[in-house]
Length: 103
Image (cartoon, helix red, strand yellow):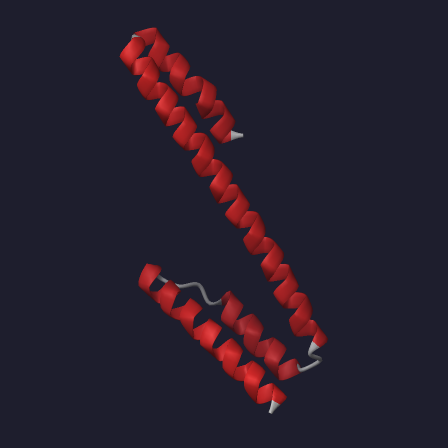
């Protein structure tokens, strides 16, 4: 809703001030619309993959794995660096757990 609002509000505010400000307002409105649309889509994809992961973890019927997964999911990174490290570790450990589960 915010992106749609900005798409109309920013150019309107610019038009009140002049043609150059209108163009700047239009650019700001379009940028806001795309930013909110991309952010919303990424959030939706994240929620869907999270739900799928939870469902697949439940299908394993492995209580230890499910507990470990819940603990990892509840850990929030303090900053971007820690978040990237946590994501990379999760990816690698997913492959390792998958391979060792098959072998």
